[in-house]
Length: 134
Image (tube, rainbow, N blue to C red):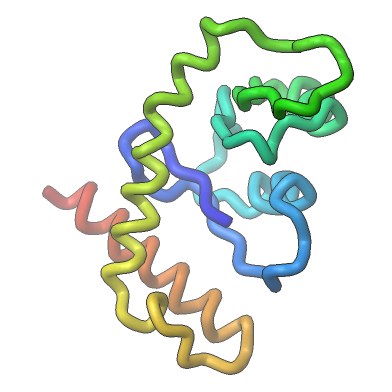
């Protein structure tokens, strides 16, 4: 799970097993960020539409922007204005594409999770150095 800033640069990265849902990994990912400041806004897809997550992030000072699921039974919590930021979610996908430039991340050759996480962090470091040293 990766968090990117508005320019597509990595802010946080966590590598875990594929079993837990993304909503349960948000707290862990934000705790493992590379920068000191917390993000003001967190943009996610429909899977992030959870009221407990919204309340938890609001207590930390982060606004959750996620479209509501179609089967939502509770009242809506967002209108269309913050959801306009969802159109710029392609910048996170660009980070994923940059990470796919690392061959060891495309095909997972490592058996141990720690080794794969190390190569993922090296890929993020490569992206950050390439973007900041221009």
